[in-house]
Image 1 (cartoon, helix red, strand yellow):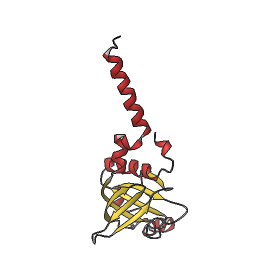
Image 2 (cartoon, rainbow, N blue to C red; image 1 turned 180 degrees about the vertical axis):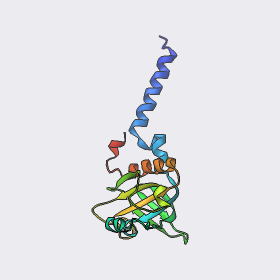
Image 3 (cartoon, rainbow, N blue to C red; image 1 turned 60 degrees about the vertical axis):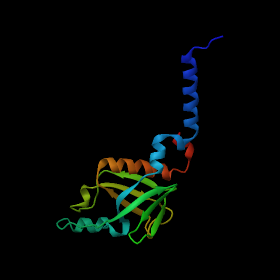
Image 4 (cartoon, one colour; image 1 turned 30 degrees about the vertical axis):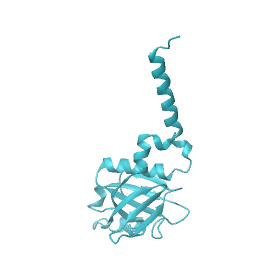
Length: 161
């Protein structure tokens, strides 16, 4: 009995897709997100002005000064590499990753940058802060970092498939 080649091809495709669905590391967009690295600008929440301060000083903008860092995502952590070869690890499990479209900060320069808010309500995540803000240069970078951070912070891997 001869089996048509289109049935064999279809059967192979179904097997390949079921293997990819069962292993999230084999899905290309997840592999890219797990290996995300690049330059980000970091602002700790303590350095941002309180909302009351902002209202008082509407005429003189409060300048924030994020620091430039090399960052990469390793497993469920965001790792900042410093110029002296040391590193700081930010655990992402249980963090809320928010895409911030506008900022309340009346800063001239950084209000126009693309911002992501990383927050954990239960414990500090970076230098005693429960909230950090990441600034990126382009909207594409912001979207790709936001997706990678959300995947790394996800506690339930079944939600990914």
